[in-house]
Length: 319
Image (cartoon, rainbow, N blue to C red; front, side):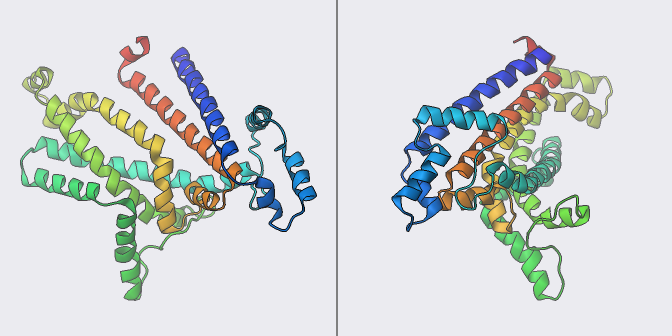
Protein backbone atom coordinates (compact mmCIF):
# COMPACT_ATOMS: atom_id res chain seq x y z
CA UNK A 1 0.00 0.00 0.00
CA UNK A 2 2.83 2.39 0.91
CA UNK A 3 4.58 1.62 -2.39
CA UNK A 4 1.32 2.25 -4.26
CA UNK A 5 0.84 5.64 -2.59
CA UNK A 6 4.51 6.62 -3.12
CA UNK A 7 4.24 5.86 -6.85
CA UNK A 8 1.13 8.01 -7.17
CA UNK A 9 2.79 10.74 -5.09
CA UNK A 10 5.88 10.69 -7.31
CA UNK A 11 3.71 11.07 -10.40
CA UNK A 12 1.93 13.98 -8.73
CA UNK A 13 5.23 15.73 -8.04
CA UNK A 14 6.19 15.40 -11.73
CA UNK A 15 2.83 16.90 -12.70
CA UNK A 16 3.38 19.87 -10.37
CA UNK A 17 6.90 20.35 -11.74
CA UNK A 18 5.63 20.40 -15.33
CA UNK A 19 2.85 22.81 -14.31
CA UNK A 20 5.36 25.16 -12.65
CA UNK A 21 7.52 25.24 -15.81
CA UNK A 22 4.50 25.95 -18.02
CA UNK A 23 3.06 28.70 -15.82
CA UNK A 24 6.41 30.37 -15.22
CA UNK A 25 7.22 30.43 -18.94
CA UNK A 26 3.72 31.72 -19.76
CA UNK A 27 4.00 34.69 -17.42
CA UNK A 28 7.59 35.36 -18.49
CA UNK A 29 6.52 36.02 -22.10
CA UNK A 30 3.33 37.88 -21.08
CA UNK A 31 3.36 41.66 -21.75
CA UNK A 32 3.93 44.09 -18.86
CA UNK A 33 6.90 45.20 -16.78
CA UNK A 34 6.77 44.09 -13.11
CA UNK A 35 9.30 46.80 -12.16
CA UNK A 36 7.02 49.45 -13.63
CA UNK A 37 4.03 47.99 -11.75
CA UNK A 38 5.92 48.22 -8.45
CA UNK A 39 7.55 51.64 -8.92
CA UNK A 40 4.77 53.37 -10.84
CA UNK A 41 4.69 55.32 -14.10
CA UNK A 42 6.85 58.18 -12.77
CA UNK A 43 9.82 56.02 -11.77
CA UNK A 44 13.17 56.75 -13.41
CA UNK A 45 14.98 54.19 -15.55
CA UNK A 46 17.66 53.84 -12.82
CA UNK A 47 15.00 52.93 -10.27
CA UNK A 48 13.46 50.39 -12.62
CA UNK A 49 16.84 48.77 -13.27
CA UNK A 50 17.50 48.57 -9.53
CA UNK A 51 14.16 46.83 -8.93
CA UNK A 52 14.79 44.38 -11.79
CA UNK A 53 18.19 43.48 -10.33
CA UNK A 54 16.75 43.04 -6.83
CA UNK A 55 13.97 40.79 -8.15
CA UNK A 56 16.35 38.86 -10.41
CA UNK A 57 14.39 39.91 -13.50
CA UNK A 58 17.61 40.73 -15.36
CA UNK A 59 18.64 37.05 -15.30
CA UNK A 60 17.94 34.55 -18.13
CA UNK A 61 14.58 32.78 -17.79
CA UNK A 62 16.09 29.43 -16.81
CA UNK A 63 18.01 31.06 -13.94
CA UNK A 64 14.88 32.90 -12.83
CA UNK A 65 12.94 29.61 -12.87
CA UNK A 66 15.57 27.71 -10.86
CA UNK A 67 15.65 30.55 -8.33
CA UNK A 68 11.84 30.50 -8.14
CA UNK A 69 11.77 26.70 -7.80
CA UNK A 70 14.41 26.71 -5.05
CA UNK A 71 12.48 29.36 -3.11
CA UNK A 72 9.15 27.58 -3.68
CA UNK A 73 10.54 24.34 -2.24
CA UNK A 74 11.31 26.33 0.92
CA UNK A 75 7.79 27.77 1.04
CA UNK A 76 8.76 31.13 -0.45
CA UNK A 77 6.59 32.01 -3.47
CA UNK A 78 7.88 35.58 -3.76
CA UNK A 79 6.24 38.91 -2.99
CA UNK A 80 3.06 40.44 -4.33
CA UNK A 81 3.68 43.27 -6.79
CA UNK A 82 0.57 45.06 -5.56
CA UNK A 83 1.05 45.19 -1.78
CA UNK A 84 4.59 43.86 -1.27
CA UNK A 85 3.48 41.10 1.08
CA UNK A 86 4.71 37.47 0.81
CA UNK A 87 2.54 35.42 -1.55
CA UNK A 88 2.56 32.42 0.80
CA UNK A 89 1.27 34.65 3.61
CA UNK A 90 -1.54 36.06 1.42
CA UNK A 91 -2.60 32.58 0.27
CA UNK A 92 -2.42 31.17 3.81
CA UNK A 93 -4.67 33.99 5.05
CA UNK A 94 -7.32 33.20 2.38
CA UNK A 95 -7.06 29.40 2.46
CA UNK A 96 -9.28 28.72 5.54
CA UNK A 97 -12.33 30.33 3.89
CA UNK A 98 -11.90 28.29 0.70
CA UNK A 99 -11.20 25.04 2.56
CA UNK A 100 -14.27 25.63 4.76
CA UNK A 101 -16.40 26.23 1.68
CA UNK A 102 -15.13 23.10 -0.07
CA UNK A 103 -15.39 20.72 2.89
CA UNK A 104 -18.89 21.87 3.85
CA UNK A 105 -20.04 21.83 0.21
CA UNK A 106 -18.76 18.29 -0.38
CA UNK A 107 -20.37 16.95 2.80
CA UNK A 108 -23.67 18.66 1.95
CA UNK A 109 -23.88 17.55 -1.67
CA UNK A 110 -23.09 13.94 -0.75
CA UNK A 111 -25.67 14.05 2.06
CA UNK A 112 -28.27 15.34 -0.40
CA UNK A 113 -27.41 13.68 -3.71
CA UNK A 114 -26.73 10.06 -2.71
CA UNK A 115 -29.94 9.54 -0.64
CA UNK A 116 -32.05 11.06 -3.43
CA UNK A 117 -30.41 8.69 -5.93
CA UNK A 118 -30.97 5.66 -3.66
CA UNK A 119 -34.61 6.63 -3.07
CA UNK A 120 -35.26 7.02 -6.82
CA UNK A 121 -33.55 3.71 -7.67
CA UNK A 122 -35.59 1.79 -5.09
CA UNK A 123 -38.86 3.08 -6.57
CA UNK A 124 -38.24 3.62 -10.32
CA UNK A 125 -41.18 5.23 -12.07
CA UNK A 126 -42.90 6.27 -8.84
CA UNK A 127 -44.02 9.81 -8.05
CA UNK A 128 -41.05 10.18 -5.68
CA UNK A 129 -38.66 9.03 -8.43
CA UNK A 130 -40.10 11.51 -10.94
CA UNK A 131 -40.03 14.28 -8.37
CA UNK A 132 -36.39 13.45 -7.58
CA UNK A 133 -35.48 13.52 -11.29
CA UNK A 134 -37.27 16.83 -11.71
CA UNK A 135 -35.37 18.34 -8.76
CA UNK A 136 -32.04 17.12 -10.15
CA UNK A 137 -32.83 18.55 -13.59
CA UNK A 138 -33.67 21.92 -12.03
CA UNK A 139 -30.42 21.78 -10.03
CA UNK A 140 -28.37 20.97 -13.13
CA UNK A 141 -30.04 23.78 -15.10
CA UNK A 142 -29.15 26.59 -12.70
CA UNK A 143 -25.77 28.34 -13.13
CA UNK A 144 -24.01 28.67 -9.77
CA UNK A 145 -24.16 32.46 -9.61
CA UNK A 146 -27.90 32.51 -10.44
CA UNK A 147 -28.63 29.98 -7.71
CA UNK A 148 -26.52 32.00 -5.28
CA UNK A 149 -28.44 35.18 -6.10
CA UNK A 150 -31.79 33.36 -5.72
CA UNK A 151 -30.80 32.03 -2.29
CA UNK A 152 -29.55 35.47 -1.24
CA UNK A 153 -32.82 37.07 -2.27
CA UNK A 154 -35.14 34.49 -0.71
CA UNK A 155 -33.20 33.69 2.48
CA UNK A 156 -31.59 37.04 3.24
CA UNK A 157 -33.23 40.04 1.53
CA UNK A 158 -36.88 38.94 1.89
CA UNK A 159 -36.61 38.03 5.63
CA UNK A 160 -34.65 41.23 6.22
CA UNK A 161 -37.37 43.19 4.47
CA UNK A 162 -39.85 41.71 6.94
CA UNK A 163 -37.79 42.70 9.94
CA UNK A 164 -35.73 39.63 10.81
CA UNK A 165 -32.49 37.95 9.69
CA UNK A 166 -32.57 34.31 8.69
CA UNK A 167 -29.06 34.01 7.29
CA UNK A 168 -26.23 36.54 6.82
CA UNK A 169 -25.52 37.70 3.25
CA UNK A 170 -21.99 36.30 3.34
CA UNK A 171 -18.62 37.03 4.87
CA UNK A 172 -16.43 34.65 6.80
CA UNK A 173 -15.89 34.10 10.54
CA UNK A 174 -12.90 31.87 11.42
CA UNK A 175 -13.86 28.56 13.02
CA UNK A 176 -11.43 29.21 15.87
CA UNK A 177 -13.22 32.49 16.71
CA UNK A 178 -16.79 31.18 16.81
CA UNK A 179 -17.80 27.77 15.34
CA UNK A 180 -21.51 28.65 15.34
CA UNK A 181 -20.99 31.92 13.46
CA UNK A 182 -18.57 30.12 11.13
CA UNK A 183 -21.27 27.63 10.11
CA UNK A 184 -24.05 30.23 10.04
CA UNK A 185 -22.14 32.47 7.63
CA UNK A 186 -21.33 29.53 5.34
CA UNK A 187 -24.79 27.93 5.11
CA UNK A 188 -25.86 29.81 1.98
CA UNK A 189 -22.54 29.29 0.11
CA UNK A 190 -22.65 25.58 1.06
CA UNK A 191 -26.22 25.26 -0.22
CA UNK A 192 -25.33 27.02 -3.45
CA UNK A 193 -22.41 24.69 -4.05
CA UNK A 194 -24.32 21.59 -2.94
CA UNK A 195 -27.62 22.09 -4.78
CA UNK A 196 -25.96 22.14 -8.19
CA UNK A 197 -23.52 19.30 -7.58
CA UNK A 198 -25.93 17.09 -5.59
CA UNK A 199 -28.01 16.76 -8.75
CA UNK A 200 -25.07 15.08 -10.50
CA UNK A 201 -24.63 12.59 -7.65
CA UNK A 202 -28.34 11.84 -7.46
CA UNK A 203 -28.50 10.96 -11.16
CA UNK A 204 -25.25 8.99 -11.02
CA UNK A 205 -26.33 7.01 -7.94
CA UNK A 206 -29.74 6.26 -9.44
CA UNK A 207 -28.30 5.08 -12.76
CA UNK A 208 -25.62 2.89 -11.18
CA UNK A 209 -28.01 1.33 -8.68
CA UNK A 210 -30.61 0.53 -11.36
CA UNK A 211 -27.91 -1.34 -13.30
CA UNK A 212 -26.62 -3.21 -10.25
CA UNK A 213 -30.05 -4.15 -8.89
CA UNK A 214 -30.63 -6.37 -11.94
CA UNK A 215 -27.49 -8.48 -11.32
CA UNK A 216 -27.63 -12.15 -10.33
CA UNK A 217 -25.87 -11.64 -6.99
CA UNK A 218 -28.54 -9.13 -5.97
CA UNK A 219 -31.27 -11.65 -6.78
CA UNK A 220 -29.33 -14.23 -4.76
CA UNK A 221 -29.11 -11.84 -1.80
CA UNK A 222 -32.87 -11.27 -1.94
CA UNK A 223 -33.50 -15.02 -2.22
CA UNK A 224 -31.50 -15.53 0.97
CA UNK A 225 -34.06 -13.43 2.80
CA UNK A 226 -32.08 -10.22 3.27
CA UNK A 227 -34.11 -7.07 3.73
CA UNK A 228 -34.17 -4.51 0.92
CA UNK A 229 -32.11 -2.14 3.08
CA UNK A 230 -29.42 -4.83 3.52
CA UNK A 231 -29.44 -5.60 -0.20
CA UNK A 232 -29.01 -1.92 -1.07
CA UNK A 233 -26.44 -0.85 1.50
CA UNK A 234 -24.42 -4.09 1.97
CA UNK A 235 -24.27 -5.29 -1.64
CA UNK A 236 -25.52 -2.88 -4.31
CA UNK A 237 -23.92 0.30 -2.93
CA UNK A 238 -20.48 -1.32 -2.90
CA UNK A 239 -20.53 -1.55 -6.69
CA UNK A 240 -21.83 2.00 -6.94
CA UNK A 241 -19.01 3.46 -4.85
CA UNK A 242 -16.39 3.20 -7.62
CA UNK A 243 -18.06 5.59 -10.12
CA UNK A 244 -19.11 7.86 -7.24
CA UNK A 245 -15.50 7.99 -6.04
CA UNK A 246 -14.29 8.83 -9.55
CA UNK A 247 -16.81 11.66 -9.81
CA UNK A 248 -15.93 12.93 -6.34
CA UNK A 249 -12.21 13.00 -7.16
CA UNK A 250 -12.82 14.95 -10.36
CA UNK A 251 -15.11 17.41 -8.58
CA UNK A 252 -12.69 18.05 -5.73
CA UNK A 253 -9.89 18.56 -8.24
CA UNK A 254 -11.74 21.30 -10.11
CA UNK A 255 -13.50 22.77 -7.08
CA UNK A 256 -10.98 25.56 -6.61
CA UNK A 257 -12.09 27.03 -9.94
CA UNK A 258 -15.78 26.62 -9.14
CA UNK A 259 -15.37 28.24 -5.74
CA UNK A 260 -14.34 31.53 -7.38
CA UNK A 261 -17.91 32.35 -8.42
CA UNK A 262 -19.40 31.51 -5.02
CA UNK A 263 -16.76 33.52 -3.17
CA UNK A 264 -17.53 36.51 -5.37
CA UNK A 265 -21.31 36.23 -4.86
CA UNK A 266 -21.09 35.88 -1.06
CA UNK A 267 -18.08 38.11 -0.45
CA UNK A 268 -15.94 35.32 0.98
CA UNK A 269 -12.31 36.33 1.43
CA UNK A 270 -11.00 33.12 -0.13
CA UNK A 271 -8.48 31.97 -2.70
CA UNK A 272 -10.92 32.50 -5.58
CA UNK A 273 -11.44 36.16 -4.73
CA UNK A 274 -7.68 36.61 -4.33
CA UNK A 275 -7.16 35.09 -7.79
CA UNK A 276 -9.71 37.42 -9.39
CA UNK A 277 -8.11 40.49 -7.79
CA UNK A 278 -4.63 39.33 -8.83
CA UNK A 279 -5.63 38.73 -12.45
CA UNK A 280 -7.27 42.18 -12.57
CA UNK A 281 -4.05 43.83 -11.31
CA UNK A 282 -1.67 41.48 -13.22
CA UNK A 283 -0.02 40.49 -9.93
CA UNK A 284 1.94 37.57 -11.41
CA UNK A 285 3.52 36.08 -8.25
CA UNK A 286 0.07 35.60 -6.70
CA UNK A 287 -1.38 34.21 -9.94
CA UNK A 288 1.46 31.68 -10.18
CA UNK A 289 0.99 30.77 -6.50
CA UNK A 290 -2.76 30.24 -6.94
CA UNK A 291 -2.28 28.15 -10.10
CA UNK A 292 0.25 25.93 -8.31
CA UNK A 293 -2.16 25.60 -5.39
CA UNK A 294 -4.82 24.48 -7.86
CA UNK A 295 -2.35 21.88 -9.12
CA UNK A 296 -1.83 20.66 -5.55
CA UNK A 297 -5.62 20.33 -5.18
CA UNK A 298 -5.76 18.18 -8.34
CA UNK A 299 -2.84 15.98 -7.26
CA UNK A 300 -4.23 15.50 -3.74
CA UNK A 301 -7.75 14.87 -5.10
CA UNK A 302 -6.47 12.16 -7.46
CA UNK A 303 -4.32 10.64 -4.73
CA UNK A 304 -7.36 10.40 -2.43
CA UNK A 305 -9.33 8.74 -5.24
CA UNK A 306 -6.53 6.22 -5.87
CA UNK A 307 -6.35 5.31 -2.18
CA UNK A 308 -10.13 4.97 -2.00
CA UNK A 309 -10.05 2.71 -5.07
CA UNK A 310 -7.68 0.37 -3.25
CA UNK A 311 -9.86 0.44 -0.15
CA UNK A 312 -12.98 -0.36 -2.18
CA UNK A 313 -11.39 -2.87 -4.57
CA UNK A 314 -8.03 -4.37 -3.42
CA UNK A 315 -7.43 -5.76 -6.95
CA UNK A 316 -6.52 -2.21 -8.06
CA UNK A 317 -3.15 -2.29 -6.27
CA UNK A 318 -1.83 -5.10 -8.47
CA UNK A 319 -2.72 -3.45 -11.79
